[in-house]
Amino acid sequence: MRAQRGTGVAPIRAVIAHHFTIDFEEYFQVSAFESRVPRSAWEHFESRIGGQVARLLELLSRHEARATFFVLGWLAERQADLVRTIARAGHEIASHGWDHARVTQQTPLQFRNSVRRTKDLLEEISGAPVLGFRAPNFSIVPGREWALDVLIEEGYQYDSSLFPVQRPGYGYPHGLPDPHWLERPAGRLAEIPPSTLRWYGLRLPAAGGAYFRLFPPSVVRAALRQCERRGVPGTFYIHPWELDPAQPRLDVAWLTRLRHYSGLRRTTRRLEGLLAEFRFTAVRDTVTLLREKAAAAALW
Ligand SMILES: [Zn+2]
Image (cartoon, rainbow, N blue to C red; front, side, top):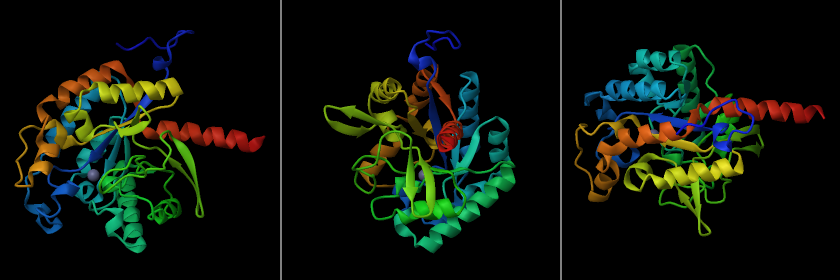
């Protein structure tokens, strides 16, 4: 149940607005499908994101929640009207790079071109500045911190790629779990890490996606409650295709199939529960606050 706002002694959950984030990509653009679906084949797949996003927008609107959509440039070029609709509904448009190439697959120059081209296009479509970036598959891993400098140089104000867990293929194990500033040679960047759950000395991924569909919903809820007790917003993420049980099934290895196609029927119901229980907003709201605080501190 949503706690009342504006009362003097409201419980802390009434004032913490978590981040609801969506990686805006099609069901066939998932990193784990790369070997099965080369980028050159993307044009030949049926687009399904319109229906999926309509469901998400309806859910968000009904629960008075705002979200951040991390949008692929490739897809924005083909779905400009949909991106405009999202922006007009009051949500934030941020960047997910051009073609879902992981940072670990790119040279610094390729990465720069990808984030520059995507930012330019999204700003042209949405009419608003693009402040944030999330790397495909959270692929800013130890040793690839140069990507953070490129983001700063290209005018980004925050990143949401450093997942402070150790997982096969991704993770930034020594990253901080809560929003913070990164001091880099190129300058300053706000980091908004996906949420984790502290559990008996371990830090477990609990930010959404497959963890949200396959584990009990109490895992994500507990992670957000822990954030509230620390007085900071948590960061949840979901993909549009996770709301679409009717999506075409690709012929992939069994473990990938399990991760991607299990629990699709319960996503919408679980999202209803989450949106009813917690307040959500876009990441830019937190980043604006962090910047204001930093500016005020600099005056002292
Ligand atoms: Zn992605």
